[in-house]
Image 1 (cartoon, helix red, strand yellow):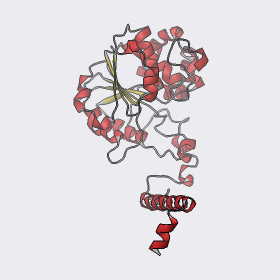
Image 2 (image 1 turned 180 degrees about the vertical axis):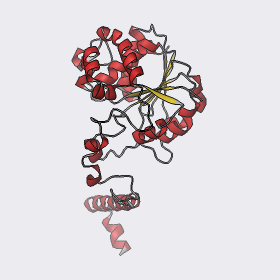
Image 3 (image 1 turned 90 degrees about the vertical axis):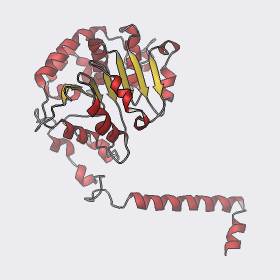
Image 4 (image 1 turned 90 degrees about the horizontal axis):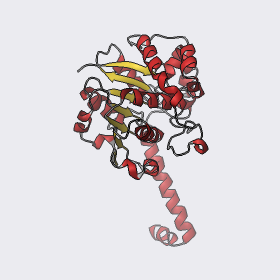
Length: 312
């Protein structure tokens, strides 16, 4: 039988069929190991469709303006957004790729859109940080580089930690060399001392894999990096919708992310971190204020939350 199989493998058509069969059998074996428990099983971190049904309504997104154990700091958020509104009329970015002109960033990009971009632009001008470390790069990097060039006179030193930097490299210019560094590696492999360089009003910008699991970037950031930050450092975490719940359609599409839940746990009764700005929450529960100050935010209310380290 083995001789027949070996002879068959020499025929091009059969050889390809055997190769494909072996590959599929290997994938099936791997899948069985990965799926020891089906979605919805109480041992599985992946929810079933029944688990997810109505999750937006159940989360109380529209109804709850306060969350148990978490200081949302509405007064401070309102005061800050009022200050940031001073920069709104000077926004230089176009909405589409065709309208971006000489800039790298434009709002309708599908990744880091209107409200997220407006708040990052405004905070960069307001804080005037000396250093920014960004984990996970893309359109937010484009905006940061533009703001550094247009409004900060190149004084902001950026470190981009990105294992897949092709899009970032496509948008960088020779003039960025003096103020930007790209570390082509996973954040888990970056020396912790790198984050000790951040001081008051500097920014740690996180756009991670959004998944806490063994050896993940999220575990590394939450357990190793965030606790060692100095007081006064600002922290951005992306894809955190109010009230720390993911959109139902995302979960049904297979995005079983859990970073927002980990962040909610971190912030409950926390004396080490405070919420300073949350665009999605403001647009949901302070819509009149946001429409009067930054109406373009409602084209996409975003999902970036801004924290500040306040204690050790």
